Length: 124
Image (tube, rainbow, N blue to C red; front, side):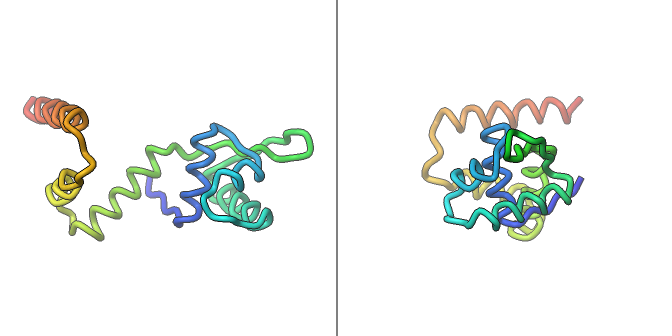
């Protein structure tokens, strides 16, 4: 499934994924940017029209729930970055990640295990 979220839509979805569900006020409070309540409401309605969230009545407010899994959005975004930035080269993408000075030895060991598991899987 190809999912295309704008930067702002992704920001809104990140708040909902983090909280598991959220009202417009919750989303607004969880965003780094100061957005007006009607703007956040419009974004949530757009996401609902796209089928990425659903809502239920919660007192006087609507509570929004994610329909789109963060992994689906992540896979789609990663595929776009791989195609647009790294010209389809997974090797360049991984090299770019490994070049990050903030990566520590524990994370490198976990990544190594993932690569080794994938190698075993593909050689079967």
